[in-house]
Length: 286
Image 1 (cartoon, rainbow, N blue to C red):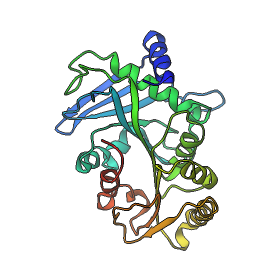
Image 2 (cartoon, rainbow, N blue to C red; image 1 turned 180 degrees about the horizontal axis):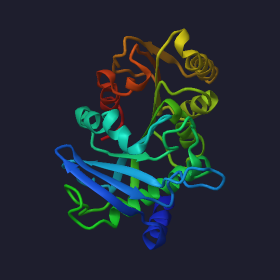
Image 3 (cartoon, rainbow, N blue to C red; image 1 turned 30 degrees about the horizontal axis):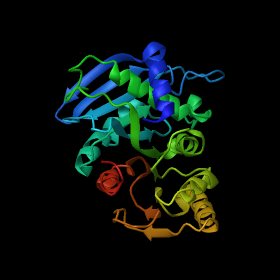
């Protein structure tokens, strides 16, 4: 168990465990809605006050023997909210289709606004603190809260995959550059409106990391296309080769950076053709 997780679990168990607001269960698993102190908001100077963090545990999930839980951390886009994203982007269904066993964590960013801010997650160690609170909060739940329970509660994060759609690029960028926790993979769904050097530096920093960038080419998506070229140049300057794929269908790849074009509408990019499922199936998630 890493030192930062042990420290933050102990602190969170003592004072920072989140509050369970809602629980729903179906054949896919259990979806939990929490209020959390380390959620992105509220934060000083911002008008956003929603402290929601959504956690999905797939049916049949069992805590691994190494007590590390794999996590898909998903950042939603503009004019969206955490609860809707789980359903509209088919995150739960795609996790099941991928065959991987992980929790999905969706923190509430700005609520239905044209604003990419990630609040407390933009400060150094913000993602580390959020995930520590998630683990501590889940450990504190009564046995039987979800299928599989926590007979051997996780104490640490295993593989962490960060994904973002649209305005979620900002949260993803701070996760890899200042989050304070190792990120194994980043998946951007039409979500590159800045911070290309941060993503490139992260990808170049370790040969085991992987970056998948899905975007819509053409004049109707000028900002993303512009930043895509900047990302390509930044990766090239740091000797990271890019594989280009097209047609909106992900193909298994040994490349560390994959740029995939799609013709899906902007809002549909994460789930058109079960794209996230295919990418997760080729990821390091267990």
